[in-house]
Length: 501
Image (tube, rainbow, N blue to C red; front, side):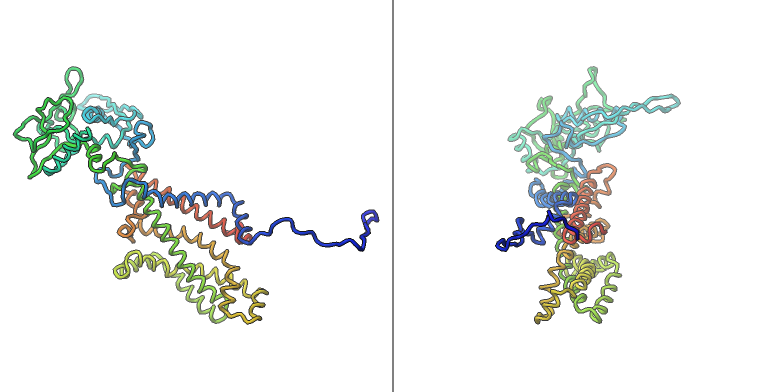
């Protein structure tokens, strides 16, 4: 090369020439992989979301005031409600009622006046419907409103033993909360027997008959000879002591009960449902935690078993090759062609009675679930078995087992293990789908599952969409996060696969 003389400098013999010491600390393979992973923003975000979901499934059943076995046969499919936020427009137990006529509006007003709990939240829309009635043009006015479903339930009929009736009276005295309200005979409300909230005079059509100033006309029963049991507790303000609060009913007493306060008597607190209730009357907040915890634990267990079996099987294939690989590969082809849903169904029909529902379900996943791991491990062993470090160890007398699991497997572990993160969402998806379809019922073992919650919520999707909305959001976040995390780990541990689906 034609190098100018001014760029050349003579070196003295006494000068020591050597490479400079590296000023940066060396990074391990794992540290280098984690550095690449942290640069993938979507995967990092997915990791944080997964951490939040894991904390949620661990904490929600604990902080929920209800157990998974607590079921209320009245508050079924009820919307989210927290008493502290009842008047804030958030978690207010709101439910929309369309096209409410004058009778319905008066009905809600009656509940508010009797119980002191106003179910009305706000008017959403007012409508006019034109039509003909008995040959005349008429205009019907209806209103779309939002009401507090827990307050709107109002009064219900309940039958108590005499001892229970006395205990409720004592509780009322201690707390100052009224549960039992004056009785109303159906004969005094036009023989309407299916509406215990009618405590005022109505016409045969159920329309309230008001006095001159627009107030309700009470029709509470006063016949002492029909009273079921003596009442000596809180009375409504207008009661001068003449109203009766129960009637006889087959060796017990029947009462009109404010269910909201009766719930407080039973549970010791007001209704508190952050995500509402399921169609079975269980707390959806705690139920998602229980179902999600089972799904995660089951998926991790299945992935670990499949990882072990697939790694051993695939390592034998890839290391020995030849006839061994040919025979074992044919077995993989047969197993991979077996439909999983058929296996799961048959196992539930014939194996569940012997090893339990969860055991048979686990066998169904393990029977063919390790095939993908085995194929991936086989590929990695074919890749590394001809490397110089393997040949050197073999020359020094290393056994086959040492070569396979001390030299080749650690180099392939990154790719193999990260693939498990992509298997977990598939396991959760399959478990949820089978539970949703009713092929597998794991509720007796785990309390509930995400698939069971979806199945129950689908029946109320039109009236109570929250019953299917929250489980769907949880499953969606779980699946997306696991996929993004798995892709990020794969790219971090094996940069050559970046961007490959």
